[in-house]
Image (cartoon, rainbow, N blue to C red; front, top):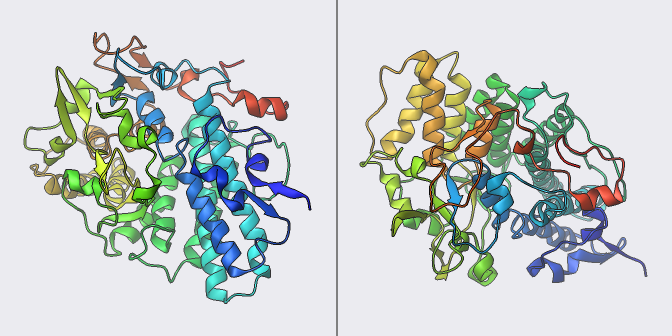
Length: 459
């Protein structure tokens, strides 16, 4: 019987350049109309969508490392293993393997989610189970479309959404669509998350490793902020803030302990899922590659009393990122905390920064109090956004936020550590409109979809 290879469909009929535990899962190759015919099959397939997020090419390592190196939180040491150089230098080529792998992983997950959404209404299951499955699949599809548009398209504000985005895929089918506009992508993401929040209305704060109503609301808050819809960003962030999550203190144990009270949505890695040198911490710690070091202009921004200093580890004349050192006895293993309460305070603060600066600083001070810092006071109105972004940089260093904080606010990238002899040679700054701030559409996609528009500056 003909088999439908989901991974090939989602990747535009090109293979991933890296292999991992997902390549041998049964839901990568299923009999048409068979595997998704009952509740167990659909739940198994849904697990396959979460597993895509855990791939090395995605949140398992590369997506966070690449976007961090795109900005100014870290640099690549002159003693390196030739990894992620193009991310730090912003000299991507269209055949960049890391870029291709991320594109392939995200669309593979989207297609898996689509197949579930098309099958779930036909299985024998309770309406509650069907609603939960639909809600989770919609949440995951939205997250992957959103992650794609953030790196392959200009920020929303640079064209008011009219600029080229990425292809929207909401059907399980072989197709070679062109690029939708950024606005169309955002509209689809918001529609998916709004529906997901409703379908998951019975899934509360106790659910951290799968989508919940609050995970959908938290991601909506982020999406609205990136879009520039400040009122809705405030509404969704406030909804999560009032739900009962609790901010946690800073400690090495925080990142080695999944399931803390501030977590809204976390990708849970088990000890058996450790990948050794492909784990997140391997890029930062000297027991393995240790290629990425902390930029001096990051660690010098932290006051000596800041409890987040625990995440810097001295190494000779440099500093290492110590957030992802160990979990379950496995060096470098971590369970990425993709949505946590602290972000909601900073989303609300940024959204309020120009219209209600006092409220914005009050939210920043909620975070500062938990980090052993004095509250900010007397901040000039025109400096409030700077204060919010500075706090976000410290709170979410190496968690994939900094690059997007800069781009959506038209800040560009300025590396004050430029010329450091311990770092590889790379440009010191990139203007907010620089063409190489966003990634190229992968050549592998162009080969199978010749009509897709390439980003400016890439051939």
